[in-house]
Image (cartoon, rainbow, N blue to C red; front, side, top):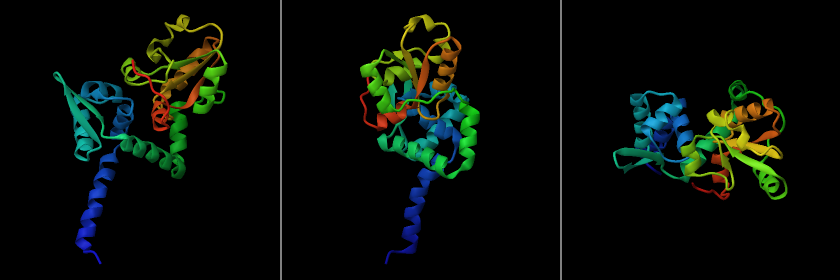
Length: 219
């Protein structure tokens, strides 16, 4: 029979990961890093954080070995420590959605309704083979460059209204962004619909696409 103190010490090690995940902002940083490696300034801007606060959150994640770093010239780039971290983050969201009623209310408040039924990953793959469909990546350029759905067109959401002419006049547009809880694709569909375009969104996004081991292209 094992020693009680040793068991307590073991479970305290497990708790280090739980403690590192115990912040909405740190989860948001993991969500961003699931798209590709980023420096602290880019992460801070995307997460609405000051540099000092973002650095402190990243250090907490690093101390739990959930993220790692590499140096690129004068920049320090952060990335997820492994695929299992992305899987853990995705699973945490799923468990929260299943067990916390407040998650759905918060989701609707944030994402809103864009009308119509989103397409699944499998439906999107069939559409690209049989229909004139444009797959539209509305994430920031650096995320597109780090990995995107093969054949997808990159138009970041904040440029979409000014670049509608670049999209074919006929055919359907399927927009996607970071994942199932990313608002960018929702906003893109609403904007396209307001301009009379036929559009829907992917039901999830790049995080789930990668975890499904589907093909990924890099710029």
